[in-house]
Image (cartoon, rainbow, N blue to C red; front, side, top):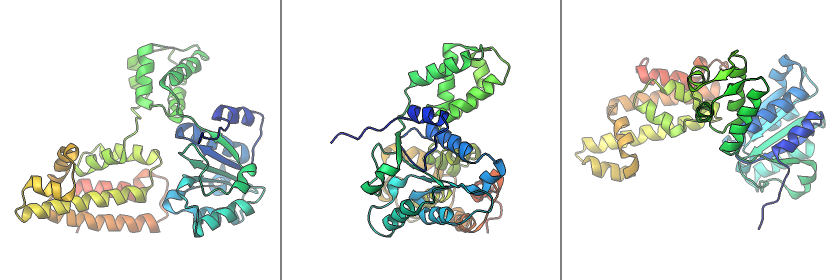
Length: 343
């Protein structure tokens, strides 16, 4: 069956240019950078007071069971603004039957007219949890992943508006540093435009734009367990890409458990190859795993489990500030790398 076609993000931008805001949106597709850009635009149009935005906007991850919090946020009153903007990410993870489906149905049915609901899904089809009876009241848009040629033309044209020339090799490096993430591209363009430079070379790109390519969660975990101090920078990239702290911590726990099993097997005189096979480490991943396991003893890993449990408690209990250094996961990385306060 062919996928249903929906208007793309360019059409949505044209509508927003005419100051048209709808009550419920669904953004489909993989282009997260463009989604974030438009979510911010809708929020700015709906709530103009910057202080009110702190209290009247909410972001929730459906894949981490935050639907209840989203419903509470929408249904509770606000003393700061009549309008609330509620963003629910990855609604494709909500089951189409059961309590969650009923809760989601009720949210769509009772959403106050003054509020705006923006839902996202990485898939290119309407999630099964959305009943057909609601389709007519939802504005659905497709966010296609940009091709490198599209991004290249976008960079050149954007700079030309400001009489800024950029070498083709510099454009290639620009894209390499930012990926095909439109939000990161826009942030980098802002830096270049405000630099005062009119002729952008490869060297200037290196000076002006940080290497912001996505770091996978697994690459971050490898760097962490290899006690590489680039782990801090990698953590920032992982969190900026929208990975939830508790999900990252769960993967850290899994790696620690594998290392503990491996070291225990070695202690019981099982050969390294047999131990790797028993715990399910593939041939392709063995070198990285051994580099990680080689940095710890069994006693070290037991101490790390204590830190993991403490971090889990902090993440679930603390209202920490937006300052990265106050983030419990950042504190965990710092304590693991320095092995401070591990008892």
